[in-house]
Image (cartoon, rainbow, N blue to C red; front, side):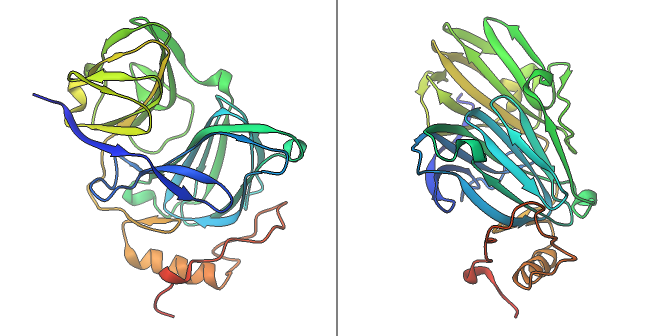
Length: 299
């Protein structure tokens, strides 16, 4: 019997001046464990005239996880964080009751050719922590746990699994793994996983239940404990998942919450540029991203 519950095709989404591949949310699957949103950036080659410029924008009720395989992004936020993220490192920002941040090509790369490849991910917060104070954490690539097992190389980007724990300060039971194989290998790792699990093929291909899966596909398993698959040569995959929340998480624009009224208040606060709810990004005077008119209600 097949353990493939759902296959989601990556679809294009515009984040301003850059196209990304959106994996979650999907109409038939709004979340995988606590993961509620995943954008795949690139791989893309940018000319000296092309830069990533995501201006100041707000979040509530979630943590953002930024992980790059190529290129660099400079992060600034309303907490005063100013950090360049490079391949292999992890930016983890917990929005809680409200934070504002921007993501741009670093100044020293803006006039030269460059590449960009990575993932922007949102993780919902547990019910009792959706309105906590915002925080930011940067973890260097050298601090991320890595190991070899059954002929494949594992990297635990976030969470706790396989008896290992990433230093990224997650707030609920989850895991986010990168697995690479130079040669063809078969992995049977279901005994180490829990909750819901999704697999994304970054490069190469995998064989699941006699089906070959390539890039730009998110595969959702019916049962994480039955996770067995073959990786072809020169394949890289991401495995992510964990325990789902009991309560539904609503997503409107950049806001996530288990309560719709909290989202409605966030809409009003951002539209009105309330400095108490959403302080300015320190060090980024660029134009902020307006609330889409299509989602502004009750004014």
